[in-house]
Image (cartoon, rainbow, N blue to C red; front, side, top):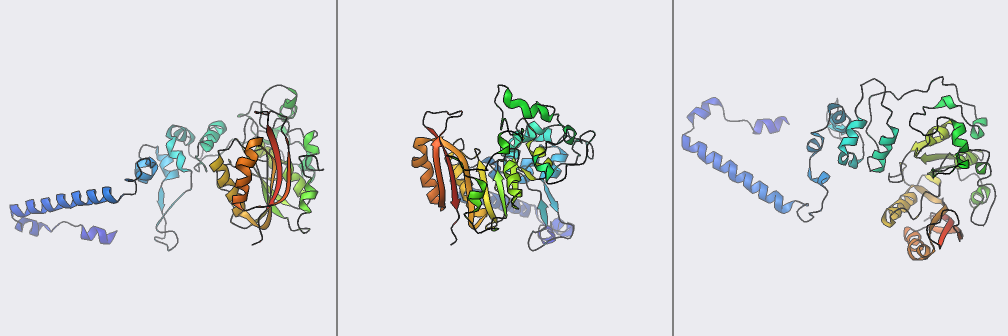
Length: 385
């Protein structure tokens, strides 16, 4: 920056006095003509010229995008100079990570960033999740404290916690229709559409999931037996409900991270209360793991034909990326129209490059949209080479 400033210095006062009036006009004309030349060159060579539909986020500078935000939002989304100057790997400035679409929803973003610094964060889980679903993921960091549960007690120790309903005082209920776990565990008895409606009742279907093979189900031990004993050690369950898949895996000495959203219920809090790892992620976010690292990826119901085809293909390639060679992708109860399975999805699975180790197809009778809806449960393997 110092070099730039010196080269842009005006002439000294003595030299300015010595210049003739005509000289100033010549200099001005030269400056104007150079500016015009630069402008025309930029317009002709700009990559956006050939793409009129290029998103405006790419055309504007960071300062332009942040100009109408509050000071707290600017701090969370702006650049910050490194205290020790330029570094070879980072440069001289650093910024927090956040979803590009955050700046497309500035009104919601401003509400999210409106709080008293070092005070209590607003109860805004619903609107925060809306931002995430609109592509503002990860959300910007904040400088406030989340509200703490009243009368909090220490969690139940493992392994008992895996199958115990946590105390109601373990979470803050403000954002949810139910205000206690009894309400959540019994909501399957009543009409209404809820995400994972019965999975908070650990004594019903959750108690038998993945224990035995069924017409369109694989048993967990059956899948683990596809690989040498002990070689399946770590993995992720995408959209894992209340965490029962991870609990079953923990009983088999396998560590699973469960991703979940909190749609109408405290899924992440419930999973963590069971002594399991949870991550608050949408299916839109790139999976935060390095390539060739995980032994197994599982997903039940969540990855299905409600996802746009091209987006689903990107997700499959991302799953392939994080699996180690020989790793397993257990696609559990994927649903689609029968005509879609062979016409759309089988070619997609082949293009990604998975080997097929297990394949079960059956009619989808629950909440089917079309008469020919089917379930697919498959176990794929990432090739060793």
